[in-house]
Length: 507
Image: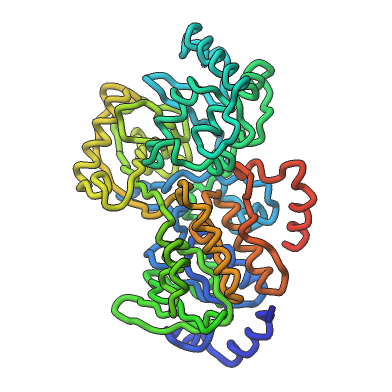
C-alpha cells in the first residue's frame, strides 16, 4: 500500500493557508467524509502525524449523533453518551482533548414499567417487591422451562433472549421496549444485535449479582466520565485542534458523488451553499451511511451491489426537550420506558449528566426520545404537537409529580441513528463488504460507515486503525466490536493478547 507520507510532501509543498482553504484546490492527502467521532478521530490522529486532512461534514455541527444541541441556553445530548472505555488509545485521546473538563458521573439507569422502577442490575428485594412473589415464581418457572428445552438455534432476538431469561420475562421486559425502538417484531430482529448489546447477561447472572452483591457482568459500570457541556464539547475541541494543526473541517458541505477509476477513488463532487466543486484526494475515509456511499459511487457498482445497498435499513429517532417548572426530580441519567400505551422509549434527565446542561436553577430539563422512521406519522408531526404529546405522556407516566408545568420545548430529529439488524442485513452487508474491499484507497469507518450498532469508542478505534492502514499496516475494521456487547466488555479474557497488540501500534 502506498504510504501517505510521500503523498503529503508532493501535495502540500509550497502551499499557503489561503490555497489550502480554496474549494476545488490541490489534491488532499486524506479526505474524510463525516465529522462525527470516527471522522474527527481520524483527523486528530492524522494531524498528529503531520498529515493535514480535509474533513467534509453535511451538518452545521460536528459530532454526528454525539453532538450537543442548544436551545435557549439549554443543552441536549442526542442519544445520551457515557464516556467509558477499556481501549487505552481512545482514553488517551479523551484525556488529551478535554483534560479537566470531564466530570465523574455516577451511573444510574432504571427500567420504568407499569409505574414502578426496576433497578439495573437486578436487586432481588427490589424485583420481588415490584413483581410480587407469585409473578416472580412464574418468571422463575418459565426460565427453568426454557433452560431445559431451549430454542436449538438462536436466529432472532426473541429466541436469544428467551433462551437466557425465559419466555415470561422476555414478554414483560424485553418485547415492548425492543419493538418500540426498532419498529418491527422481535421475531424479525437478528440475534446478532442481542449478542452484541447484552452479551453476558442472563437470569442466572442477574440473580447472582443480587444475592452475592457482586457484579459478575462486565457490561455494567458504576460511574463514567462526561464533558461538562455535553459530548459535543469533545468534538468541537477536536475540530479546533485539527484546524490549528493545518487540517480543514468544512461544515454544511455535502458529498454528492464519489468518483472512481477502476479500483481507486479519485475525487468527490461536493456542494457547499450554492457552490458545487470537485475535491481530489489520495486516500479516502467515509463515515456516511454505507447505503448512501454506495449509491453515490460514479460509475455505479454492479446491480447486485446497488440492490444490497438499498436493502440496508435504518431507524431514525427524535428527541423532545422539555423545560419544566416544579417537577419532582429523579436521580437517573436516563430511564428506559417499558410501559405499554405510551410511545416514548427513553427519558434523559440532563441535570444528572451535568448541571451545566441546565442554565436555570429550579428548572428541570428532560429529553423524551421517540424512535421512528423518516416519513412516518411521528416523524412528520409538527413540533408543537410533539411537544404537547411529550407533555401528556410524561403526565401519564407520573414521573415528575402533579404540579410540574411545561415552560418550553424543542424538537431535534436525527436521521439514520441506528443500523437495523433485520433478517436480510447480514446478506446485504456481505455483498457490500466484498465490493468495498476491492477499492484500495477507500475505507469505511464508524457506526454508519460499517453499518454496526457500536459505541463511540469502537467508532473511534475503527478510525485509528484506518489511519494505520493508510500508513501501510493491515487491520480488519469490520472485526472491531464483533461478538462484543458494550464498550465496557471490550477486553474479554480471550481477546486480551489481540487488544494488547492493537494498543502497541497506537502510541
